[in-house]
Amino acid sequence: MFQSNLPLNCPPTDAHEDEKWLYRILKSTSVCEEEFENYVTIYSHKVEYKKMCGAYAISLYELKEKAIENAKKNPVIGTYITKILIKPQYGKLHCGNTKTGHYNLWLYTTFDASKVEHELIEPIV
Image (cartoon, rainbow, N blue to C red; front, top):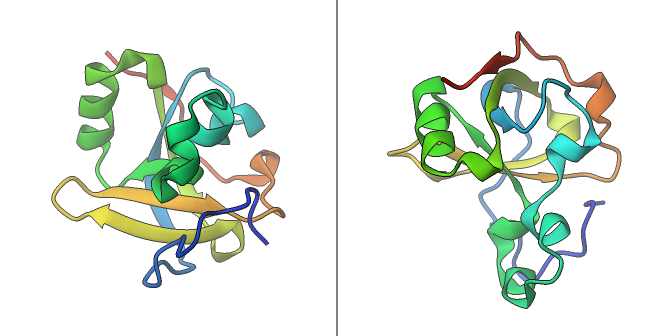
């Protein structure tokens, strides 16, 4: 069902399928599979991530400003931003922090980045 073997009680019980526009920080100007890898995949050598539910999800933001703010604090995560239409068939979505509008999305195995509807990719200045 999910792309990764998730830890116990992951995703949270209040995570749900939804359709909404959210912002994603990208490393390149291409919306491809590599732009949707979770921390467990990217940092496979970090054993502590394997126990963290959020590390199996990808990060998204409700507000463009919050995504840009986060990317500026940590430029290694990416220097581009795009608005993506998240669809129910992509996975389970959870707003982990209503103050920052940060969402986690645990992707299903059927997720295909090439079919993601998105708006203009722009550099974070």
